[in-house]
Amino acid sequence: MVNPGADVQILAARLIDVIRAYGSVAVALSGGVDSAVVAQAAQQALGTKAVAVTAISPSLAEVERRDAVAIAEKIGIRHIELLTSEFARPEYRANAGDRCFYCKDSLYSLTADRLAELGVDVMANGANTDDLSDHRPGMQAAERYGVRSPLIEAELSKADVRQLARFWQLPLAEKPASPCLSSRIAYGVEVTEERVKRVEAAEMFLRHRCGQTDFRVRLEASELARIEVAPNLLSLFTEEDFRSELIEYFRDLGFRRVTLDLEGFRSGSMNDQLPIVQLGTATDE
Image 1 (cartoon, rainbow, N blue to C red):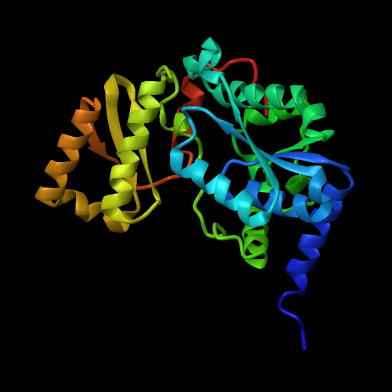
Image 2 (spheres, rainbow, N blue to C red):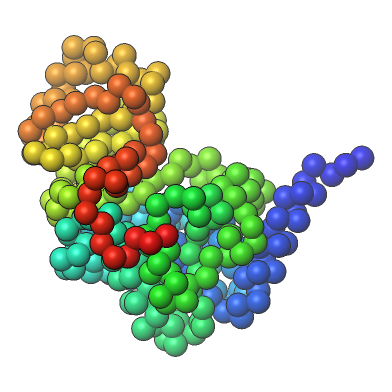
């Protein structure tokens, strides 16, 4: 009889072997499934020679911070939080297509300065093979600081990552992708702490009222909120009571106009703008 878990055990062993070869590692733990799987493998491979590092800034939603803390505790990996200062960088606030480079550069430089203190030699992120075909300026920052991508080195896709998360019984195995709050701001619109907090509050409203996480509140030029939701939820927004409540709440937050995107939720839809925005020099991926 074929063991149905045999394939995933091979994937797990492959990832653990890759990380074990590092000797010691600091894993950038965001609260998502990719970095959680890397942290789990690092703990199994290296024990006390592994540490999880979470970047704390206005762009990290509080729910993501709580998830990072909870998953680190479940895994049993040493965990620290570092306050990052990407919002102090004009290049980050300018929000060109290379914004993510400056975010990751801030985290990796800060972590690199503390490697000796943390007792590790290597930094690792949660990039998987699917990310190689996406717009990921942060990967250039990883190259600058020698950050390893163990999922890519082990040739693991997003589907493989979710399979491993289920195998290790991680509670966020089915968690949808949830990029940082700054990714909700349209390219060319300045990223500010007020704007990301506004988006966070708007998405929290939808999470409580809709009970789902497959949505985004995009902040466009002229303080316009463009809401993307799963197609099965579109009809909810035509109900007068809900529509009126949403508009009033969003306007109280500071949005001037509120629109519903009839195409529905599309992860990474802001990248549709990339050909028409002025990109910086860090986007050659």
